[in-house]
View 1 (spheres, rainbow, N blue to C red):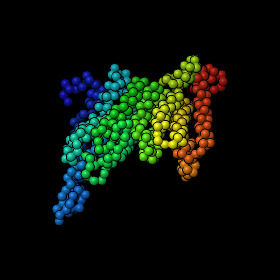
View 2 (cartoon, rainbow, N blue to C red):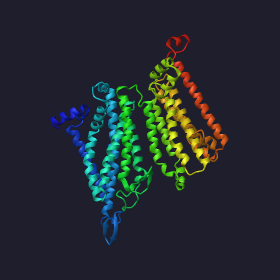
View 3 (cartoon, rainbow, N blue to C red):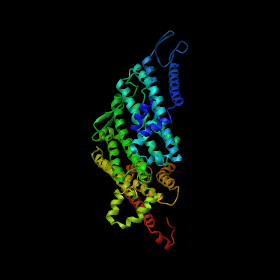
View 4 (spheres, rainbow, N blue to C red):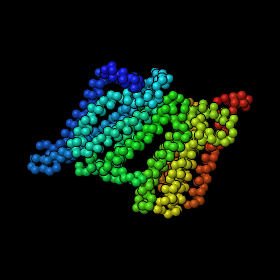
Length: 518
């Protein structure tokens, strides 16, 4: 790379140049290009071996056979070859890039150079862009060498050009999303590169294996041989027959999620003690994500033929929201020392100011904000429930389920906050374990008992599957379970308040009362 180009890139982003200088050596470039070419040859030779010949004429690509002659279905063969590239390129590029980014930041942390980067005059966005573009540059090179093969196989397989171009955009969007998440994961202490890459690989595999991309089993069809399963979203129809629209939708979702991840990176990069999101941002995030979820449910309003499908998938959105709230607990919980300082000086404010601080403050405990987030999610769905073409009893059950989920999210938030206040270096593991036990023990109990919601609906009310229990439980057990949930939340909140009051004591008062100073 000539000096003039390097100088121009250095003026645009010095972090990017720093990453390139350590990676774009002749040996690394040759190895990257060579492995890409070898991989492509392996894929071609594997698919060529499946073509019919004189010794094995009865291959799947044989349209018809006359004596020893077989008419090859070339379009189907090129489609399958293209499908291999469609799967291989994203999985290698995204999961490999995630591994490299986490490993790079972990190495920077060990060497102490990450603190040097933090105090540099560059903005956090410039540093992030430099990392995202520079660290996986050899992967970019290897995939760039393979992209012409993907385009050529798509052209030979008569796949529309717009779908090929949308694949490139789709690939870039997924890289931006997962790479940004990898950098944030490393900044909050996740230095296990293999773990991050494995999680990414699993998530990406699931996303690409969704029914939108299920193969039809024959070669005739719509480009990639994909089933036309429609998924309504508000007034739009998302299906595999129009992959461009589908990928545009995925692109918008990726851009929105990447924006929120960048917000967390911006906050944590220059101040490692800051929370990943402000509480105000968390309210907006929950509202935006649940509006996206709601878009897939609007079609059920007034359509009684889809109610059975809705009831079959009724746990999908609550489960996604549960994971969202667990993530927000981690994103909104300040470090222990910050909580101790807040508890020590919060009493100086008036009662209303303390409440405002619990709702908006960045240094205050997270449970109130989590409860508000759960309430926001509930308020998004309650109007939709009321418009459903189902009996009023079923509507009340759905609204009651929303109430149970709000209380459960608040209980998990208070539990996590209590454990994060303990004086232990492993308090994050303790908080994770206790919340996991609070979710898993009721489910394990139900599994050991072996009874379904029709047999023991009352026990289902105390788990994250409360909606199943509400279908079969009578009014009295539902009311008692609701009171029990409130009692548990009140008891845990009282315990948290006592912890905060004790943490807020001055060192002198704690010593006079014979307590250990935090």
